[in-house]
Image 1 (spheres, one colour):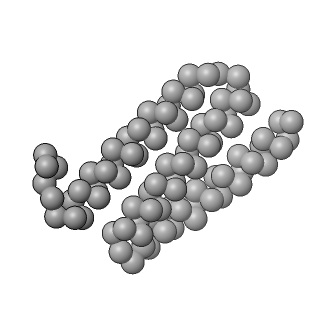
Image 2: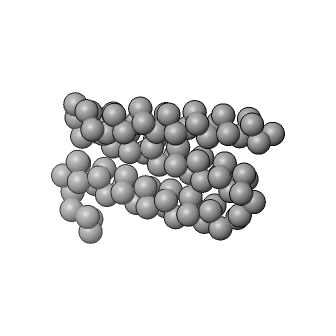
Length: 88
């Protein structure tokens, strides 16, 4: 079981590298934002795998906080790109 989780962890870390490439080299701001969203999802997956491997549940709290901040950032960028103010 742990060997499979280790393989999944390495795959997710590799995919995170691909997302970082998209974030840095993205031709447009929406492309970069999609890369940031996918990177956030992968980080939560990495936190879940590490929580299972180490048997420490507080790591899941880190993943939950990360995804909440990612969601708020996505909403903020969407409002900004549509030309509306943040308080509208």
